[in-house]
Amino acid sequence: MLKWRDRSPQQWQEFVNQEVCVTAHDQQSFEGRVFTVDPVSASVVLVSFPETKRPSVKVILGHAVTDVQILGSGTKESESRMKSLFLPDRTQVLSA
Amino acid sequence: SPRFLALCPTTLSSSSSSGAVDEEEQRLRSDLRERFLRTLLLMTDKQVEFNMHEKVRVRARFGASDIDVLNFQVSGLETPLGVQKEALLRCQDVISCSFEL
Image (cartoon, rainbow over all chains, first blue to last red; front, side, top):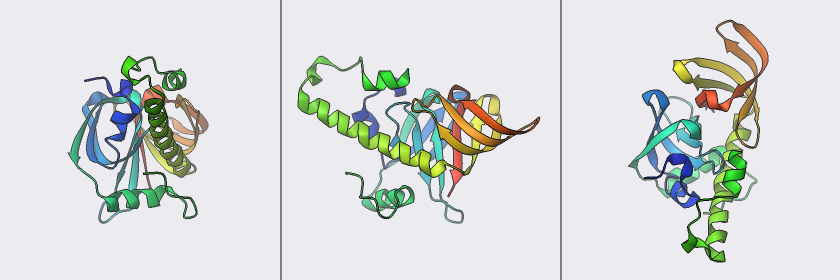
């Protein structure tokens, strides 16, 4: 499998809206739902919605990512819930 | 730079040389990038926790990133030696950063 940084936008796109576990340097791991993967730096943006706390956003820098495992797939609802965090109300919806 | 590599991929396979595929890839790329830029916008002026190598954790107010994501500009960086009013963090030294909404 290609290194994370060297993958194509199509391959990154497949992770968007999926529940994943990202493994990084120093054996650290991060769980959350993928909002995007920056095509320039290969950084992964994860969102999580803890039940009792405020939503949190984590950015894992592309150079540190060693592996990404899919834990579960997303739904239309999870996608629109994520988008509502990032997009101001008046902006048009991002294309599918 | 990473940006140059992203914009001028050297790994495009010869089978994907048709215009339609390139266009589709470019569309995906711009969607992903727009989302990332919106993340940076959302992060601006928030207290962000930076998780660095050797399990060092520092907090600071996020200001901006350069386009190649090589440096982050932050304010009020809380280091073990005191608070640094303005600082640049090298992204190579950062593993992850997180903030709450």
